[in-house]
Image (cartoon, rainbow, N blue to C red; front, side):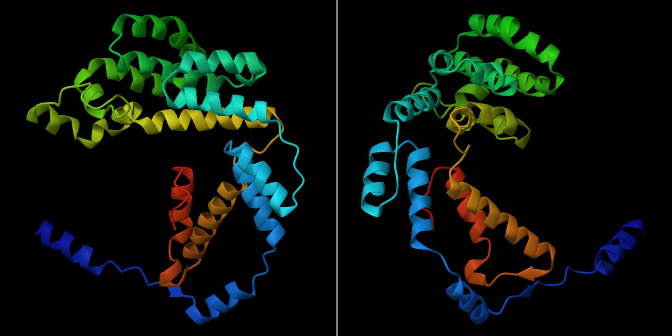
Length: 275
C-alpha cells in the first residue's frame, strides 16, 4: 500500500516546464549586429600568447598587428620552466626556483605552498618511497594541517594513497606505460567504486596541471599581470551567462546551447582548439 502511495506521489509531481527558447533568427541577427573591433581581438590573442608563454610568437604577432610590446623574454621563460617542472613532477625544483624568483610568492600564500607540498608527497608515493613520504608528511604537512584545519581534508585524502597501493598503481597515468602491473579483476572492481574517485584523482596528470596553473597564476600576479588569460575570463563569463538565462527560464537556440560551458571546459583543460 505504501509503495502504491509513493508511486502515485511520484506520478503526481509536476514535470519541469520546457525553457522558452530564443528565436534563432533573432538570435543570429543580434550576434551579427554585435560590434567587435579587430584591435580588441588582436589584444585578446596577444594576451593569450603572452600569458601562455609563447613570447616569440607574441612579439611577432604584435609587430604584424601594430600592438605595442615590451616583453621580458627571460621572465616568461623562467615562469614557463617552473610550470613545466610542476607538470613533470619535479616539485622541489619548482619550489626552489620560485623562491629564487621571488620568495614572497610562497611566503604570502599558505594554501599554494601547502598544495605544492601535497603534490611533492604524491610524487613520493608515486615512486613508492613510503619512508620519505611518511617523514615528509610528518615534518612538513602535519604541522601546517594543525595550524590550518581547512587543510586537513586534503591531507587525509592524500595520506589515504598510502593505504591503497593498488589504487596508486591503477590511477597513475603520469608514469611511463608498463611501470605498474595491471590490477587483478577483484582489485579493478573495487577501485572503480566511485567512492575512490577523489583519491584516485590525485594520481592523475590533471592534478599536476591544476597545481601548475595555481602557481603560474601566483607568479603572474606577483609580476603585476592578470592571473589568467582574458580568453579564460571571457568563456567563464559566457558560461555564467548561459546559467543565468536558464535560471530565468530562457533557453538558447540548439546550435548555441551549452557552447559557453563547453568552451570553458576546453579552455581550462588546455584544449583551445575545441569548437
